Every structure is written in C-alpha cells, then in structure tokens.
Amino acid sequence: MPADHPATRLIARVPDWAILLVFCLVFSLQVISSILQKSATFDEPVNLASGYVALRFGDHRIMPQNLPLVKLLAALPLLLADVRMPAPPHPWTDASRYAFAHSFLYEVNDADRLLLLGRLALLPLALLLGGLVFRWTRQLFGRPAAAAALGLYCFEPSILAHAGLVTTDLAVTCLMFGTVYGLYRVAQDGIALPRLLLPGLALGLALLTKFTLPPFLFILLLLALAASLARQPLALRLPGLPPGQVEGRGRKLAALLLVLLGWGMVAYGVIWALYGLSYEATVTPGFFYPASWSEILPRRPALRTALLWMRETRLLPEEYLYGLSYLVAKSGKFVTFLMGEVRFGSWWYFFLVTFLIKTPAAFLLLIAVGLGVQGRRWREDPLCAAFLLLPVLVYFTLISVSGWNIGHRHLLPIYPFLCVLVGGLVPWAQQSARGGRWVQTALAAWYLAAALWIAPHYLAYFNELVGGPNQGYKYLVDSNLDWGQDLKGLKRYMDARGIDRVWLSYFGSASPDYYGIRYNYLPSYHIFKPSPDRLPTSVVAISATNLQGLYLLGNPDAFKAFREREPIAKVGYSLFIYRLD
Image (cartoon, rainbow, N blue to C red):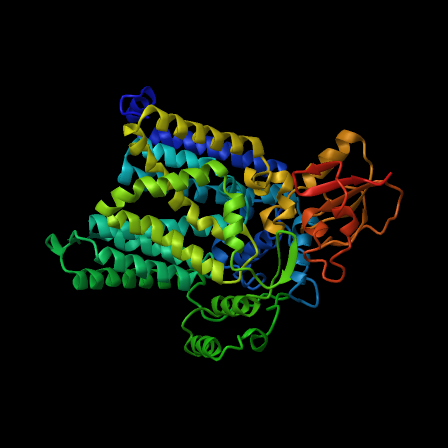
C-alpha cells in the first residue's frame, strides 16, 4: 500500500493498544472455537494429569521427558476446581502413565471441563508471542508492517492449532523468540538492566519447557558473534555507571558473552527455583520413575560421563536430570511416516517436506518475495538480517539432522521470525507500482481465506501443493494431521445421521465412552478398556494414523484394504468413515 493509501493512513492513526486488542479478540475467538469442538490430543491428558500431580504434590516424575513449566501453568486453574485423584496403577510402568491420566480425566473427573481450563490457561502465551512479533516488526519496519506481521501470525494454521493445546510447542516458541528479541535489543539499543533480567527469565523458562539447551544456546552464541561484527558500537546504560560505549569487535563480543553469561545465571536460578531449591526428587506414594537410572543412561561414553558427573555434583535437580537422560535414551527410536512409507528411523528432508506442505502456499510465496526484496536492506543493516535469518536457518538445520521426525510442530519456533520477515514487505509495497501492490493484496487475501476455510480443523491443514487437507494423510499423519482430536466430531457425525454404533480404530488417548460413542473395537493405538461388544454395524471409523499402520507394529497392514477404498466421509480430516454394505 502507498503511504497515502486510506488503509495506511488508518493504521497510522490507530494506537498500538487498539491493534493488539483486536488481535487478541480475533485470535482468541479462533482458538477457543477450536478448543470447544476438539477432544484431547494424544499427550494432553498425561500433560494435564502430571502437571496437577506436580503442582499439588511437588512430584514431577509422571512425564519426566516433558519439562514442568507448561504442565504447571495448565494445572493452575485446576487448583480452584473440584478435582479428584485416582489411585495410580500398579505396577507403575512407562505405559501406565497414560492409563493414570485416562483415569484422572475420564473416570473420576469431568474431562472437558478440566481440558478447557488447562487449555485456556496457556492461551496468554500465544497472545504474548503475537505482541512480541508486533513490537519487533514495528521497531524494524514501522506500524503498518507490524500490523501485517501480526495478521500473518493471527491466521497461521499451525500457530492456531497449537495455541489451544496443553503441549509445549507454542510455549517454547514464545520463550525462544522472546529471548532472541531480547538479545537484538541489547545489540541494537545497548546493555540496560531490564535487558539483563527479562531475557534471562525467558531463557530459564524456555529451558523448563523443552530440553532445547544445546541448539538454543548455539543460536544465541552465533547471534552474539554476528552482533559483534556490526559497525555500530554497543551502548552501556547500567544504573550507577555513567553512559558509555563498547567499541571493537573483540570487546563487543566479550560484552555480549558476559550478557549471555548473566542470562545463564538467571536461567539457572529459575530452574532451581521451580524445583523448590531441592536436588532430591519429591516422593509421592504410588508414583515412581518409569525406568531406573541405569536403564536410561545413554550408551555414548561422552553423554553418559556428562550426565553421571551432573548427578554426582548435583549440578541440576534430580528430576530435571532424569528427564534429560530419559529423553536422550528415547531419542532416535521412533517409527515415522512420510509420503506413504513407514520407517524405523528418520529422513533428512522430513522437515523440509512438512514446511513446504503444512505452510500456507500464499505464505511461502510471501517468504520468497520477502527474501528477494529484503536483500538490499540487509546489506545496509546486516544486524537485522542476522537476527531474522540465523535463528530460522540454524534451527531448521539442527532439527532436520536431529532425527526427531515426529511432527511439524517442532518447526513452530521459526514461524514468528518469518512473520516479521514478511511484515517487512509493507514498506517496499508502499513504494512499488500498483501491480506489485495488487499481487501482495491478492496473496494476503488467499492466506486469510485458507485460515478461515480450514477452521476449526487447524491441526489438519495442508496447502494446495498436495491437494489440501483431504490428501494430507498420504503424506503425513500423527501430530501433523491426526492426534486423536476428533472424537467429539465423530459423535456429532453419528448423531446427525442416526448411526447408533461404529467399528472403531482410534489413535489417541481420549475416551470414546466419555463422549457416548458406542463402538466395536478394531486394532487401535490405543483405546483404554475397549468395549468387548461385537454387535451388528456396517459403519467403520478409522483414524488416519492407524489407517497408515504407523504404530500398529504387530500388523501394520491391518487396514490395507481400507487404504484402497474411498471413505464416505472424513471427520475433521483425521477420522475416515467407511460403510461396508
């Protein structure tokens, strides 16, 4: 839009708080609408149950590989609700954590009420992330650009999908982005007290959300190095000291490393504070570690030695170290699915594929235009280029070689940076010819239409390159499409068509019985306490993940015959409905 365009003039007159208020309302409306229509995804019951146990008893051992921050935040409103505790199953094994969570939500409590409270408790993190996207884009490119970046964030399907879930992906995205933005403020505006404390707090909270320490710290170190190479000096504005400047690449790098060290000290204190400044794990009767220390210590000598040393020196709380060891022991041991193939292992190009088919096509085109247009500006402002591109490129590379091919959601941290990047197109569009402005407007309309059309099935979004969500199951399943979220939709489908009972193969940890779904059991991963009935019915409902045989290790081709048939319907794009007669 040109500078004198009515929309540009309107945005220029609207205060920031009004733009952010509209964003909060529109974003929240979309997320809450989806929350109300979706059942629990696979990990939500165990996250919520383990969070409540950790908050009430101080015991973090139910789901050790998932760090406690998100679980505690989600469980906070449950302290005000009438929550009952089931007896833990015996023996306490790795799998029984899910059985306990199932009983916690679906047998002794009202699952939908607790899920709603937990999901809403995490929504502010998504709103905070949107505010940070707006603020950074405004600082770089101005208010119209910030409004555009916020609009991209507000309607990005993957962001909307995970903003309403009791999972860690959106939270760690918010905290990582906030920490990187804090380092940019230090490099651009100088070292000041708030920039020493708040990013350190964000870093500590990020390290309590996911075990992201090595790649995240590597990105921060690279950014510190890039900032030290910038032409401008580093300003010093600390209380009790006269204002000053740090000049010279070596001195600036040393100052920035000291800032990171200070953040690390703050983060270290935050980690210990959350575990109550106690090394020993809290022992709650009936709850146990799912495996012994000796079973989960990694075989690689260097990692094993490092973890044993951290235990012996009590460098970190016992429960934190156990979760880290457990995750290392489990890493790389995944069964994965990509483009029709099931594999024990990973593909180096897995995340490249997910990015290309799970990102709206209009967004992909805007990113390509943004990379081309911003080239000249970045030669003049390499600091901006480094802070927008390095986190995306380095994180994308590291997650691609990690072998964690279990979900596009692991790419979520790159999207806020891409929103800022594309928002920077607005100043260029203001100066471009009318044809360029029309192209940009058409892409924006296409992007908005894609988000509105997929609602409320944001998790199942696939772009037009593969034929949309109807064809998505041919390329990706599990948390990319089918995470157990459509039991409510199945019940609505059955009621609307007078279907009394179905044959059901369900991938998820929610309860068909809780939603009043009458079913005959088909091989699933997994249904707790499946119905033993075998009553007549001609309708079959199969989760897309089971249809592709991803986790049906005993018989991966159990539903091969159905893969060759066309379903009569798809519920939320994740549950396929067939009729046998």
